[in-house]
Image (tube, chains in turn orange, yellow):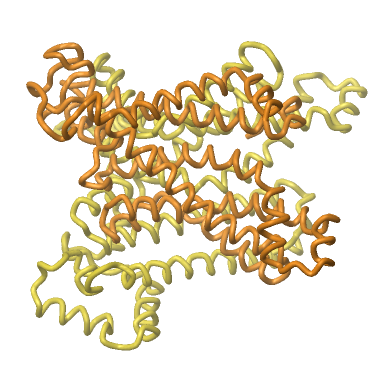
Length: 281
Length: 328
């Protein structure tokens, strides 16, 4: 653990990312305390510029507080990012484990399936899924999970392929352990570090995807979200720039911090790779 | 590769492409049935409000009272004859709607792609030549920034800067409204409208290609044939162009093929921001109107575009690089 932290903190960007991420997390947790009441309610006069009328970041066309929207939106963004990543991990890890451990025809089938999902325009599929199952937190999480599992399946498959012929796995096989307990008890714990690194990047892209969906009007109609804020500011950008600028900054900072933390995790979990990490695409 | 093997390779790729497209059609079909509510009302693009006789007519047309495999067959037959359904909202066939919007999307994605590829590779080459200098770090920072910025927000910020504040460029549409232009002026007008959307869509990929080409160029520059060329006394500029860059381009071509789907997905957001009259804008309008037939048409059409693009890159790759193994 000490080693982990030392390697992680050697990457300065990762530490900055962690601090920003914690700040966003605190904002999300404290949103009901900082901005009690619904973010959908009128709080001041419409189109108040930042700083005026007691509004830190201004108000929108209906007099709603943009800062309150951002604080409450943080809850939705982080929630959707985390839950859809867990769901995508569940799909990706199971499929990758099946392909990598069983090999043969199962591997072929799973990989063709994965390739199919990597070929099709995933954002268009996500839009279609949310639209057809009517926009709600559940359908958004479902759609994001459906389009973001393929990289997990690939990484897990590769790890399982290389681990399954190792001696400790053979030892467990000789001992007569069941396949399932070998996969979960022996192989998976050893394949964990690339999965951890990947999942922080997946939370980041899930947040981007959620914001894009709600920008297009496919957000949960009962939940304030950053993408919705930008979408509603789009048509009045000539008179109220603050409505679309600040929520965008919030998305940028959150996603950037997650990416930085991901790099830090990668350095901390693979110290050997970190030193000669030239330019990973 | 040997030219005699090309037809077999091509055939294999075509079969693969056909399977992907077929799978997408089946996917669309099951989506209609997986959706909550009556499939007929989804096809009609209305939920609950459609008139009963009209729905009855749709049920007969799509065989909705027959077993699922019969319905699938009817649906497949329709798509294979390029009948993508009918938009009851707009009273036009979906295929003709898509056909009208296709050129604008191709222009936008094509321009963004060329911009991203040329600027990205140039930046990557520059960074690879000067590893560890400030020019090198700029690329890392740019990549981190564009990985974290929502595409639609970049578009809005460009509008804010170039259209609202500086008033240099138009912020929406594909051509000026209410002016009579001829000849070269039309082209210039469209180019002016294209600049911001193509820049928005391309910036992310500039960062991606820059990082990728930097990495591959560093890798290629380390190989023996480059050392040999240098030992022979080939001028540095020629080594860079003929030996390093040419070999470094191959992985970039592959990567471009893989990312085609993302590029087209991104064009939906960009076209929405800039009211660019392409397929993405059509998808947005269909979303607002809950016109599912059109949305599925967009999914089908964009998938076909991606598959075709992949086919082209596969082919390019095989023709350009004789070492590529022929495995279909």
